[in-house]
Length: 438
Image (cartoon, rainbow, N blue to C red; front, top):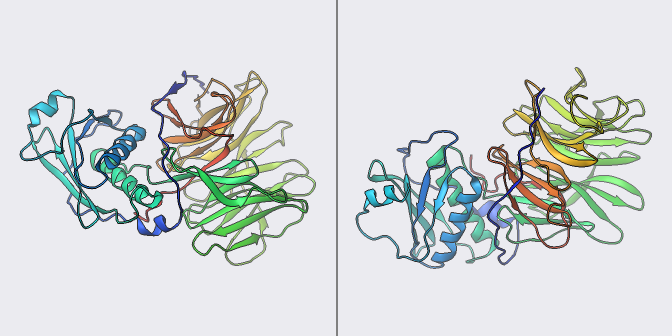
């Protein structure tokens, strides 16, 4: 087993814009690209340069800034964004852009009908390689409008690299006693309308893969319980009314099953269909120990979880029918023998978790196949890692800037950027892409 500890790096910092509602944008933002991909040459591990030209039309500067930042935060391309300039007009001087280090030129226009028209030029081939139109008919600069622009940037990233971006997503987190939400670029930080009162504390948020539902733990004077909230209708319901502790919900990849921690003397992992009202059934048998923090494998067949059945917390794997329990982490690294809070990557290759090193938690990943371990952080206290939909970025809680805040890490380049800045923030949960695109 190997373990490496690269140095932390800080990236470009996001700007904060106005905030408004959440869910209407999920239904309104659609992928309506109209071109046929010709394709740029993209080599995995490289960062092709994309020249983001000045945009024409209403709110052009905002559109350009959002798209350029999204491409930069995606960590797959290099956004080339010189200050000033005029929108492109007429034939392009492709050799000039090549000398600037650009493999592609992004030309965008806001049309009078409310569409964002984007043409992507292949500099090497000296021609337009892709064209798309994206509706941005929402109130300009509103969260819904910004989410639509994020969707356009994500599609451009797919045109260039073959992988759709993650800008059109959001992160739920815990602040004070309630849930808050923030856009993937750090904009529109606002209360989510759950918890935050003297009588109710909300913890451990989890997104349904459709983006329509959120599950969380509600802590009251009567105990802890799992709540499911429908973001479309606004209705909430209690899930699996079991006595004792009920915490750390997690949805299966197909959204049909909810895993959670429950118990009175010790805790186990339980599974339940959150929509049928059927009784929950137990997966693990801890025999008075603590099994907690479940996370599904991408195929839905296994669950990684934390257990102290060896006398200290480690990360385990179990089949969803309760068979084949095995320890994933081992005692071969670290000094306090404390590994917990796993999150399985969307591509299934790695499990992120927190491990105590020299008395301080750090974020690590372990390869699900060969069990090799990689340390991702070393500065400050870092915990509660959660994967982004692209299986490359992680949001986690860190004290590196002082009070606990959310930070985003690119697991390939180790570049970091601070996502939240005011108050404190913890237990981040990255949403799926909020556009209904396939």
